[in-house]
Amino acid sequence: MMNANYSYPLDSSWSVEEIETVMAMLRTVEDAYEVGIPATKVLEAYQAFKKVVPAKSEEKQLGKAFAQVSGYELYEVVKAAT
Image 1 (cartoon, rainbow, N blue to C red):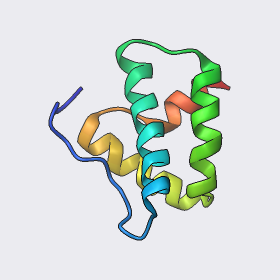
Image 2: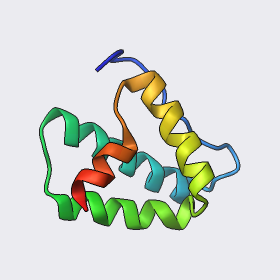
Image 3: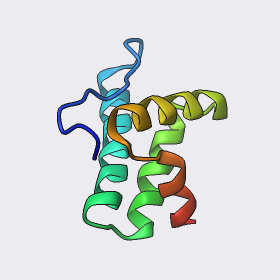
């Protein structure tokens, strides 16, 4: 991990529930790197995440922003789980 004290890249227009869903996905990515988790858990979190962030371009932007602050790649975790 690059920096233990970073902020999640979130959209202020999201509802509290949507923010929680996106944060759950980003925590899943962290867990995948730090402790390892079952692919099914990654895919479940990703499925919920895609309801909040359906556009591939927005997903890529969010993944890039998260990678810049954390060093963890959203795409790589999802790709490994599929």
